[in-house]
Image (tube, rainbow, N blue to C red; front, side, top):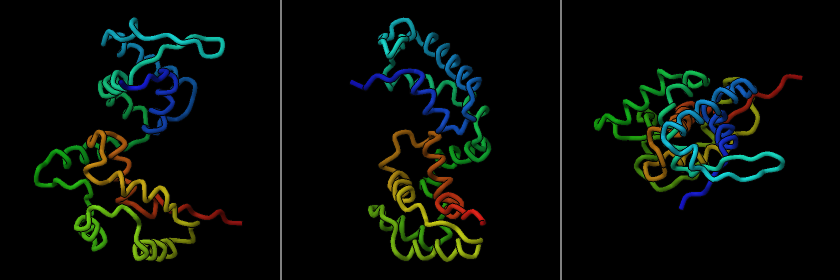
Length: 190
């Protein structure tokens, strides 16, 4: 049985995933959109109610929330800071059997090695050095976020996508396609 989640908690997570600015008005609109969708699905009235603090909140299964999210993905994309065109192209490429690789970086030697090995999800020493050199040339950056990079590489394999066409997969692939921008943070100038 899937765990139960409060709608407010789920909406906060969705706002992070879709990079929607964290404003009360955005939160209220998105929460209301989810409420209408859950009501349309016939889940809103049947939901378990639990008292948290002084207020009551409704709890929903992960599956119900995912179904509602999939129904309003276009709305979430429109309100977020995700490049819709790139995301649509990513989904189209994923659905195209000729491009059946989750990593669209076949031109580079490191990515070809990664696809051949396809079981090792740790960042190699050589990959780390290559990225550090690239970062030096692009101006001085802080340490590479190896932890996030390792997570993204593990998530990037076909076997690890819960929803391969979802926004999370898109964001992982965007970070893997732009490692300097994603894993290197520019140092603040004194």
